[in-house]
Length: 187
Image (cartoon, rainbow, N blue to C red; front, side):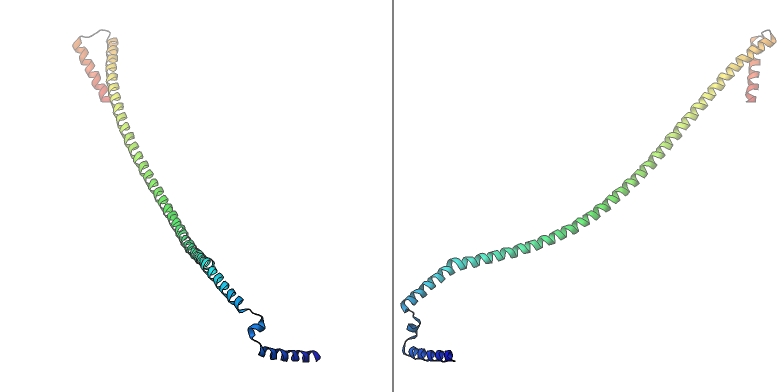
């Protein structure tokens, strides 16, 4: 308790002296020095405000603006990339459809060309067969003519041997004609 009482007593003495003296003097402040320090503080505050704080806030605003622009640009790029992906998928599908269509057209054209080639080959084969048949018939006629001529010669020679004497030319011609008629009738 003694401590408490001495503190209260000291406080009473201080209050009495404070009443009698000025507050500025009590704090130990020199008012001339205080005003000079206030002016210095104002000048420093003005300098800091003008050359540090204003450029710094402007730089921060510009930086924030650039960051916002960059974010907006990044968002646009994202949208463009997404759009390009969709475009890429559409183009792939379109290319697949075009490929299938071209493949189908190529197959159709190949089938048509094959059919045309087969038709042309059949026509050529038919023409060759017709020509071959005509040649065969011509050869057959020639052979028949040659055979008739040879047969006539054989008949004459056989007749000469049988008769052993040669008849006159008129009888000879009549016998040949008659032999040829008989051979033709047998055919």
